[in-house]
Image (cartoon, rainbow, N blue to C red):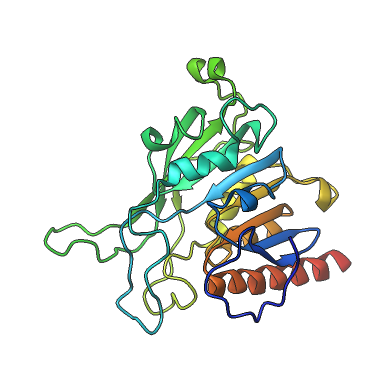
Length: 270
């Protein structure tokens, strides 16, 4: 795993991916999150899995010069099974996500995630985007929300059978999170970019910020897109580990993470 020049124009990442950015606050890898060599690079015992995998809806903005179809969004990838490898293989107690820590997955239900991700207690959250989307135009209701499944990763089957979830959120909040999404005219970086403040609320609720950055929880996002999870993690005083398969998006994530790293360092120097 080596750090490489971000101007390389390869279309597909090589086996094991390539590190585009690596600091004490953030690691950004251009790679395929299904690649075992990429998965092996995430530190064991990390603090939170927070990700927005493709939903299998073949999203296309209709503005071909701006956005193309998102890789993996054709419904052919079993994303819950992919994410299962990120929390750690069945039968292991120290690999991947730390036991009794949280996951947040956008767009998928508890029923889809509980088995593969070995979840005990779960909660169904709703992101209220505060704006009505296009959706189906043949019905009188337009989509204004998105599901987020939160769960407590419980490595032992006996704990899951009991519905263990004693690692309660640090700050108890309501299940509806209201954050405006970028509208069609302002979504110029990524078609499904999440507001970083939304992700920051999830991170703040489920991770620990230590006095020293290197001791704070590590937030992992294997489907990083434009890097909103990384931005939220760094601004919240946590560390992040991001993987993105699309080169241009991975480079954008690097730019955004580096910008907030610079900002945080300036603030710390005051």
